[in-house]
Length: 315
Image (cartoon, rainbow, N blue to C red; front, side, top):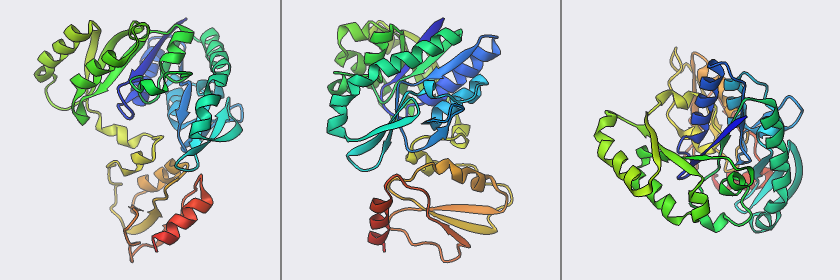
């Protein structure tokens, strides 16, 4: 069995989509492959074949593998319910609701479940492609870590670091990550990928060489910007705000959806986005509901009372 882990220099650098793409590429080459994310944080969850729930991104990755989603693919899922607390889902089932400060102490107890799920996938498939969470550069979270280098060390899985050139500063992202990692963690990194490049990638040749020379890590490529990523299901509420292709047929019927602070399972809106003749408008805080909306949707929330107060505060 072969395993590799993609970690990022930050959130939203494209790890989820890269894992999905690699899963499909491996499958097309005739190998059995499964995705794995030790710990995820998302209110956009998917129901699994074994009756639990995992992050939406892992369900998309399972689809790329030709598999039904399974709770082993994302054994720890955090579903935020407030600014400082989350529901804790372990192997598909809710086990607790904790404040962030309490989760830090609780987190190390979840490593056995994480490694158990990983071991089952490892035994069942030729390849397992692992996705990290956030960034290993968040060294203040390294103690008891189960999402990035803590998992990679425990499972002895090699790491490829992904940087996002679209947000700027990708050289500092990658070189800086190496600078703050403990030597034993940095030794697990076998190379890097520069993601989301717009234009001629040869223009970045000197920057690419700079990263290789300063880190000693192998460069695995510069990947182009992929605009159709906006069509695929996301797991972060910020994905709702990404520009998406306008549905054919214009917007004869306008539907307004209120952007709650703890909106859950928001890709339930995707069929409306794709419906010809429908214009789906996301109403942000401080904005008025369009007067010509035929329908207003109050979406699901992981904090019903909190979002009720939020709506009242918006008038």
